[in-house]
Length: 207
Ligand code: TMP
Image 1 (cartoon, rainbow, N blue to C red):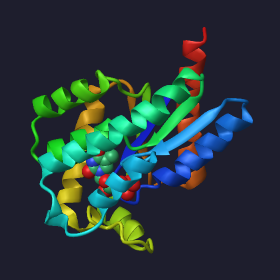
Image 2 (image 1 turned 90 degrees about the vertical axis):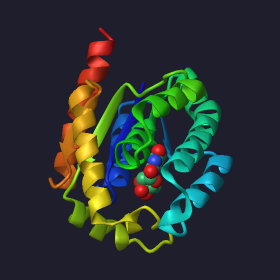
Image 3 (image 1 turned 180 degrees about the vertical axis):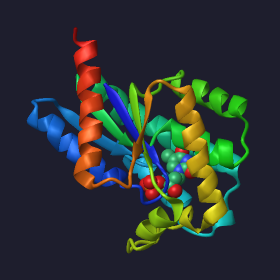
Image 4 (image 1 turned 45 degrees about the vertical axis):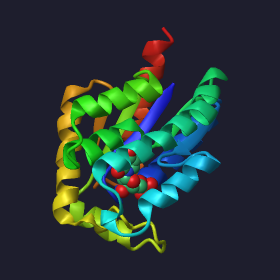
């Protein structure tokens, strides 16, 4: 089973992934967690090119290519082998991030992104996707309070991030695997909602 977490900046994905991973481990599942861009050593080097420096450093199409270079390495070296071993793999972001950030917001067409997706991943997508939906200003405030230099996307401005939020909600409307979670709830409430959906999925697929 492959689960991805998506959402705008500062939506609390990392905390929720840790909680879900702990919960699933406590229920005797083997869990493997990765993130994008990144995951492998090579993909982490690509991440550094993407998330630091001037916002205008890359255009959306170049970003999409770098994201997929990182994703393919992560998929081949980590995601695919761990799924083969029967683990539940959880990724902090996956292809939907490219569909939204470089596609819906950045202007790379849906057709071009799906061609890239098919070329690199043979149309592989998660079984379940959680979209943590948060007020943009609140999320950016949280993200900007982090003490690191990974602020290239955060610097793209309020309008950009409002569109990211809108894009995710539109995408979620079209995809059954996607679940929008109100990320303004408490950490425990968010975790409970996520656990319920994962348990239902596991139950339905083990019948
Ligand atoms: P993170 O801060 O959630 O780890 O993500 C890094 C940034 O990269 C975030 O602002 C979203 C952006 N991103 C894309 O634009 N496209 C992608 O495909 C991915 C995976 C991330």
